[in-house]
Image (cartoon, rainbow, N blue to C red; front, side):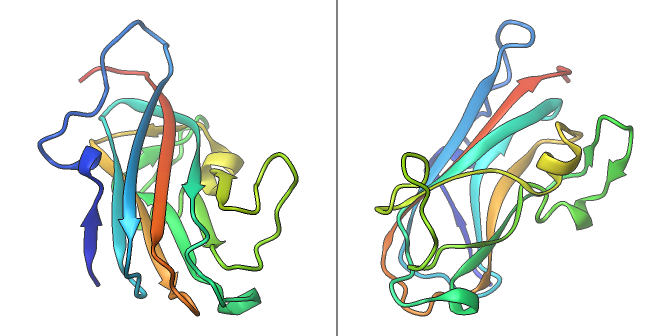
Length: 172
């Protein structure tokens, strides 16, 4: 396992956490992918303690030129901290590795929806626990990550951007 960190998500870069009450912020990180093996982690966005995640998306290149069906490169999109759902259910850090999306395929055969998911790359809204039980309240500062589950059939270098939309529900 190798960990890669987007420049904007570095430990010396502050997460956006100030501003008017209830105004939405978009944290984002872009990383050039030139290698992706199973269990590799891409730390993409720093999320501040007290953030309420309400949405986001993954944008970028296809990355897998030959993968098809179950042979596609797949990733989980998750968080490195515990979250709280609106129903008051606490989800531990051990269970948030796919809180924003589970087993997302980046293969060449991934179907495109005209005007929404262009054939030249990816433009996918976040899902997972965020979609089923969100919004998600982040209890500690953390990273939003992409974790490789299966490697690409034919990895092509390219960029990936993760955007996470949140507002500050609580300032620490």
